[in-house]
Image (cartoon, rainbow, N blue to C red; front, top):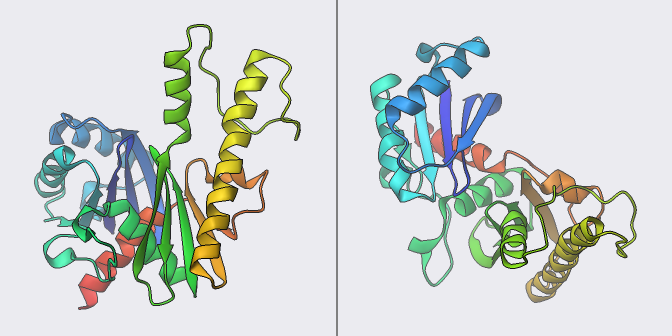
Length: 259
């Protein structure tokens, strides 16, 4: 099986993938100084809980937007799983799509992987919205080329900034409002309305502008942990794919394996 590793700014996601099917997945907070040995102890226990062994891993691929974390993840794969990992976007794992932007070397691995996976699953022009540390809006044309997009502060980042700057506001849980009213009657409900409905309004406005600029029918695909949360209160998304980045890693590895 393939061990696919998606190292983001907030979490590192590990997934076991077999024939494009995700058999198991785990996440841990991103910490650039976490050693390969620490990863191995944690991951070995989780593998056993799911009924797998280290020997079930026959290949590994890493996609990362945290360069300082890459080395320890490479050591994890080589030392404990005895496989030489591919690094998405580098060497043999160079991107199989066109990055049609002014600075292609600066495109985050997660965004390129999302584009690969979304194009594989959906025809035509696409807008991919990924809810992570930042919320990104990526435009992919009908040929699969990455055309650019938008980077906005992630919802948790926005909430953290609000709470840290306002002495009397406390951290709230991000959840779906119980009704559609945007008039909060408590401090907490007002904060939730501002964060949730404010984010919905931002997404709907930006997607409308993107669609107008693209000028052709577009499929909107959402991914990331909060996608399902917003899908409950907006008709913005045509599809929700929680594991799009992992799917992109699996597809990239598959393309290399058959090349």
